[in-house]
Image (cartoon, rainbow, N blue to C red; front, top):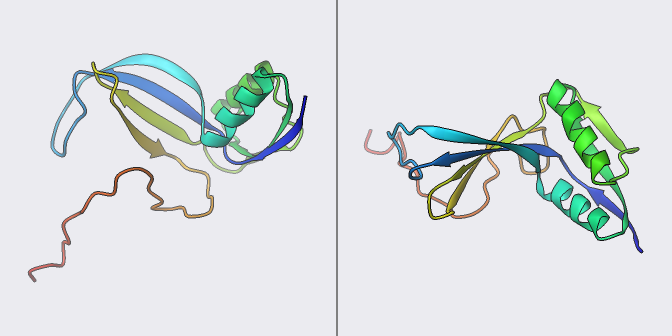
Length: 135
């Protein structure tokens, strides 16, 4: 069994099933499937803890009620939260849209400040029209 320290932010993944992944201008209905602990750091910490390692998570959760829920979930997974602290912000939420084929789109909401934020983007980069172009 290893002693592991994981650094990072904990988020709440809110999972929604949609008929199709929306494109700009769409209006889609969603079926809520619930929430789970999320964020890369929390996912790694929980997985390693479940594999039998002693894991400490160092990083923020929000000072809101979701922050308390996230801490309780981490502890249920056996993650040591002694160095996890409450930030004066809402706990980050991530909306995960799942379509019928299992394709997902991830939308990060209420992020606690971290390196690269705001505007940090993962996955495919999309070109955005320049509103100043043509003027």
